Length: 398
Image (cartoon, rainbow, N blue to C red; front, side):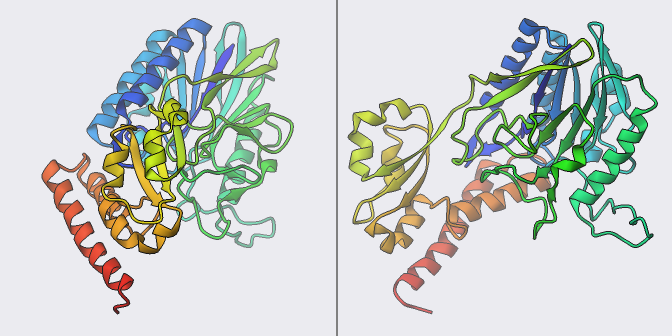
């Protein structure tokens, strides 16, 4: 039996303000091709299927096409919602979807019922746990009946414990846990949304004791946690921030002779890589050493002594996918004007970040990306309001 472990598709997400629909479609097409070529039996998606709890129509259509492709290639699909997903929306019609080979384990109101998956003369017992919000799903009382702290670790441990107990009703086959969590020791990136504040989102690897393989989602960097090689993040298939300069992959799990026999990674060959370039604007525009980055998402850190006029627009004449400009040198002193001209994506008070936040809210409420006139209005309002404040601050006003 062959199982592909992937996660964090974030269907509908944008990179800065640029659409990723083509890249996400290319990934799903590539994945279906791998299923057909390698004879994959089961595709596991460990959460954050969508990027928003209320995905846009285009995102729903893209996921629909992607799942059709995986099924046509011969794989059964099992997925759980992550913290970006709405369990109710993602799980709508789950029983009917299961009849067609797409199993969505989205019920966060009761402990998981293990699912026995059989193919190619092998079997695995799958314990699937959707993302659990401890403010919605409280942990069970402690041994003495006293309440326990509402942490993600406690509620996840409760569900996994119940799942392990239920495994006793099934034949003795390899066990697979699917979860969406921040396991202690994992290395995050700038892309993941915090699950909680103050460390209550952290989960100890020991809660997964007893499972032969643990397919995790949430952290976008592929990595092993907890030691032993059996608890793994597949990572996101595409880069969703400039901190994700690492290679992207999915994990291929082989089950043979009643055990997890081998785990390998399959490099994802699609999607635009990211790079952060530092230097003067002139050097970035002319240095031949940067030719290999022409197809990347580019963030520029300018070291010019003075602010450059239309820096982002000029960069795009060489790097069509440049999306961010900051100043790393003396010109940072006068960066208020630059932020208004180009948008300083890393500054939470910049017009671009405020604009993206407002546009994201409008998209989530409306269910589709705002129209052009609305985007223009939001952009103008953010620039006018914040740049006025920056200019006052820069001149010593109050």
